[in-house]
Amino acid sequence: MHADETPVNTDGRRGRWAGHREQRRSELTEAAIDAIRQFGPEVGMDAIAAHAGVSKPVLYRYFADKSELWLAVGQRAAELVLDAIVPAVAAVREERAAIGAAIDAYLAHIAADTHLYRFVVHQPDIARRRDVVTDVIDTVASGLARIFGDRLRARGLDSGAALPWSYGVVGYVQAVGDWWLRQQQPISREALADYLTTFLWGGVAGIRHAADVPGGLAAFREET
Image 1 (spheres, rainbow, N blue to C red):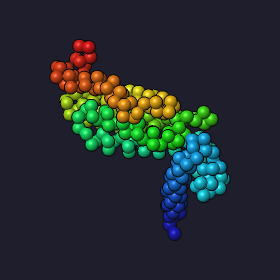
Image 2 (tube, helix red, strand yellow):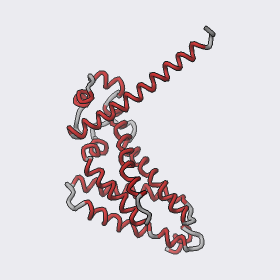
Image 3 (cartoon, rainbow, N blue to C red):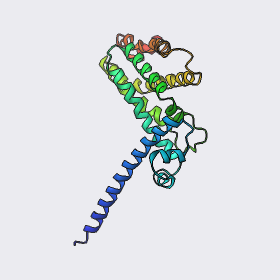
């Protein structure tokens, strides 16, 4: 055996273990999400472990505490939000329809998955070493920014506005959607989506005007 073979084998074992650990964490995260959907956002680690078919010590082997599990669930929740929004937006070409589709898809998603939404967004007893809600907003806003950026560039405009616009849209819709859920959906999803789209459309429609103004967005800002 050559002297350099042992580290290679050790690294291989470490790589296999790391891959197994990530796969197991992913499986347990999905089991936790299923438990949250079944038992509600206040579900405890005991119930999550039982639902996953493992002992609580085994669960803690992969997640140090509920805060770490909350982070993993939140990251997966962000992916699920994007999975709902991106196909809806991609299916339409006209800008107003794209905004409406994104808003309606988001509202439909949180209304259909309310327990998961509340677990991620409203967890007062979680020690937040990282804010998973911010992570979710970052993930969704980045996805929307790519869509906005493509549409700005298609009109020959600077795409630098795409990211701040996306954060503005996400924050606005998330705040209103949160109110809507907390108030037990006092108006229909369709009506709320139309209200939000109408309000946002005034700003988005400015893209068309800016494309016709020499200097683009900067000149458009000066005019207004």
